Length: 184
Image (cartoon, rainbow, N blue to C red; front, side, top):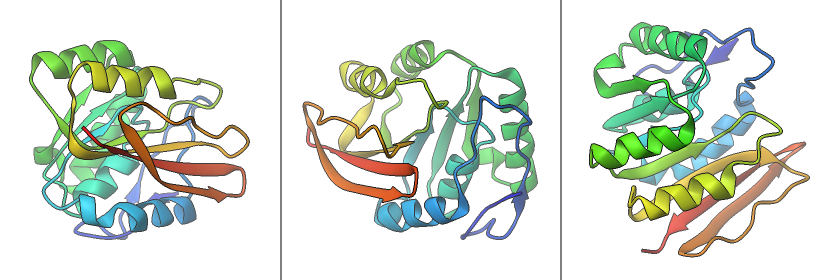
């Protein structure tokens, strides 16, 4: 079972999907991840692009983020995210959409949304990191000093990206977290 670790919804259990295409972030990894980014959350506009059950965005809202945009291409993931948001009483601070990631980024650009914090946790085996990060930059979706938190396999480090600094890179067994800071 997946829990919200801290904040207004701390301790609540979240539903997860029964799909082999999603992988909830392990509790110890999620706790370490949120320790790394705690200062960026109060008042932030957040994107949880490959939301799955919504646990990362919900954790961010629980810890003081102002708004979170959840997106997943899987309809059942979107329904579970909505159920989890209702259960945690955070739904008023959330928008849930079901698009492929490129279309989602286009929609956010048209809505003139810019993000302070972006979570990237695509399905294993899908190496979308560079494409998504470049898409965020080209569409002007990152505020200055925004951070991107990418969860990936430890065996495949993420590359340096133009306009971004890697400010954290930690391994937790087979999982790694890379945090980029937008310099622009």
